[in-house]
Image (spheres, rainbow, N blue to C red):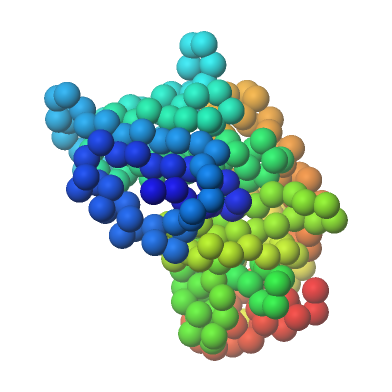
Length: 262
């Protein structure tokens, strides 16, 4: 099967037929017939390893001879230079998800973009992205926007990258997501209150949250330098705001009005 993620195509080739069926069920909307630009092979481990109760965040580290290595308690993955291919040894969906996220972050980095933990909503071709830690309200906002008839590009990982004249945002297949993109007009943070409102917020304030919630393309000085540079360029190109909202339809009303005026 081949997936299309933010315009990047990758074929998944698991050795285990049961895993292949699981992946087909997990990513139906993102399957494409377009030629793959990258390949992920997934092998069963020769000796089964017990999956941990709590997962650590992956750290893609430069490997000798080029490329990246990603390791967890129950899997290993080697990613070729420029993200052309990856060889994963492990069981279940988690190693595949992890490697896809790392490879997509690398692909976006090569475009000057980012993969951001956040929720992105779209209206009439214009998108807004809000980022923040767990509990900030990303999924809640996405649910309120959906209930109001809006399109949620994704409520977990948002792909963003520069194009001529601006930036694009695209959905990804993790949690809630659709294979769709839009012109990114707004990036901001979230807050809770009884009255929903849209507040201007300085780019520096947004940057502090954004940098903590963007995936490193690689755990190195170069990777961190890329992250900082891309975030700075992004925030210089869009409106930066704080959305304070309550858990009712007023949140969607405020977002709709904000996007319609931009």
